[in-house]
Amino acid sequence: MAERSVQVDHATLNWWVVKYSPMVAARAQLKKRPTLNSWRMDEAYIRVRGKWMYLFRAVDKTGNTLDFMLPERRNRPAAARFFAKALSSNGIPSKIVIDKSGANAAGIREVDITLVRF
Image (cartoon, rainbow, N blue to C red):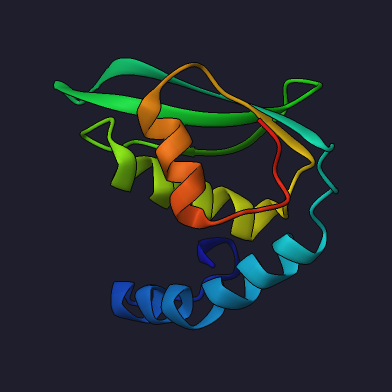
């Protein structure tokens, strides 16, 4: 805007973000490439801004990140939130590969996906 000598208040920019970001997100979701049928899900304990958190991450066979989440705890509710979020934005895969964590298996069961083999 400055290149065109237009002065815009910060409140106007904030209003534009609130108004137009859902439309941009919806268009981006439509152009998203389809994911492969097999997912791999893992978690790591990392430090974010001085605070220890778990990184839940789902990747497809080629290693493309499908979704991630940073919960404070590694438990059933956190795993269920992650799987619900990943499944809603990427669809239902034919297979999800997880480690032997009881939280992950319980999270998948809580989301109640009967089509998923693991």
